[in-house]
Image (tube, rainbow, N blue to C red):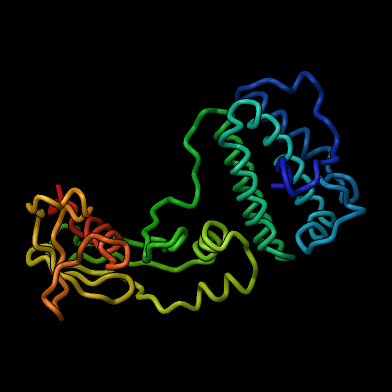
Length: 269
């Protein structure tokens, strides 16, 4: 969102009337309605449209609907920052990166900006924020290495299957959280990674296959005295070498055990 305290210039849109600067549902609705009705392509955006320099900014300035959404985001951010600055400020940076990644794609901009308005509404009303972590599973150890869960079947049975998709929003999360820069090239490179469209497990034998195609066998809880120190509370065996994963990030243990927990949660209680 363009209301960041650093890097992005302060918004130059109209100021909401003082009567709107209150917390609660009625206020938030008023903020949104005021922003929407005041919007016009030349003046509605929360940045100066005369200085629009990026594809997303130019597209927002040329659209009544997107300009209204941008004003709603600005109004929502102002109110959310008053109530929870520690949450609102980093969220605004994240939302801006997502919006920039849309470029001139109107549908992408509308979806991303609507999501932002909803996020600020949740902060204002004290509700949980529906963000990138809604039913996601990590396929790797780096920040943002996530995929979206499409369906689950046979959980805790010999035929546990979780269908997944590596979506654009997942690629954006990786570029944002690990690379710290969302670009079209970064998104394309991330989406080009070869991943399975599902991961599976036999919760009776403990054998399972991960999102990246590795197979492991779950041997149960680790009773070794150093289990807590190493971080491998459970024993996972590489069936090709018959050697246990040592619990380190390099061994792949944290990611593998998390995927097994998704497939066979009853085995790890």
